[in-house]
Image (cartoon, rainbow, N blue to C red; front, side, top):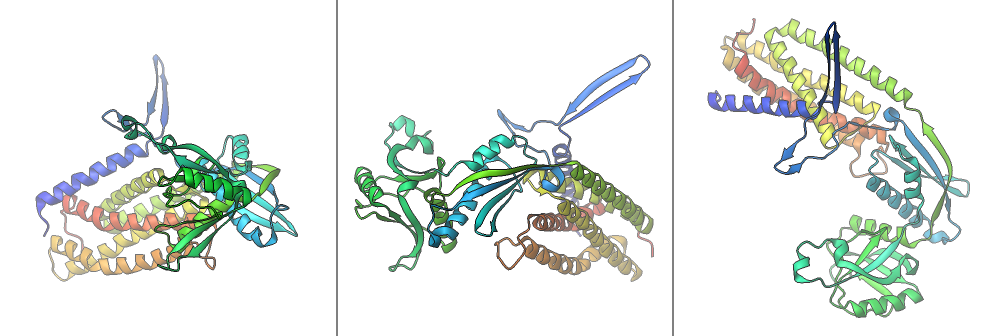
Length: 456
């Protein structure tokens, strides 16, 4: 049997966690107006601010919705490939896509969809931006050609070194830019068999690079795209005069390829031109949200009545556990944050059913133990312990399926749809939290609140 004091401490910890999640899920503001005869009271309640001393928690806690729920903008750009050699086209298009995705992430837009579409001999870039309000700024940001720069390290005064930022240290422009870089590619070091990124410069770039490596010998040269550093600045070991350089380090084949793609994004002269812009109406999204919420509420009410009707007070405690489950899940959606698409909402509702299923398995095992003559406390502990194997195996299978749908390693032979991934991530997260609330939270609530023997 568990220690009583430990059980009480866990119980208060659960209540504290529930209270924190309740505050996180509190609406940004709730205006209330009461007009009854001479009583005229109006007040707006705001979500409390989290502060730690003088520091305030400034993270945006609003739920984020995908394109199907929030609406947004869909942009189509024409890609000018006339300046690209045929053998470099595939790499150039991949570099362009990578660069646009990075820019959008910096812009703060989530759950975007960036596609390269081929129409006969013409290439198009299609970008979907959910919930974006300032479309003109997004167009300007996306449509700008990537700027690759090489900047050298400068010496700072000792008193300024401690507070110096990256942009304070790397301020000397070497004159080298993307127009001088012919190509970046992944190579294997013959001495240690580790992947590296090799750089090749044109004739003008070779001269500028030679001067830069001479000037910054035993110092560092940073590589930036759109003034954003893309690699840890390497130290110049020797003057390089042949226009060829190698960036070495603790690269994997994947990370080396990603760096080469980023470098090519600023080197290959791919320009894009906006040819179509459409606004996606959010009315369908609001209808979908309302229907999804309505379906979820009706389902929760029916499940709650079933649990109370079938298990009495135990069912009521399980319902309390479900409420805690919902608060924790929504709080994590806000904190991570998770971008909710309609399939994601469906995944959340489905995971609620999985959480209830765990409680049913546990309660039925408890009934079996009481029928064998065990007292209530022993029946409860044995019920949780013996139901755990079934709960673990069932949920593990669902999590594996969810991981296949989520495709975390971006394997081409598996799903790559953003909406399917949204469904998978809410399902996986919901199952994990459901196990926590069903086995840990409900068990502790039963230990503290339930004293009545379960019916035979």
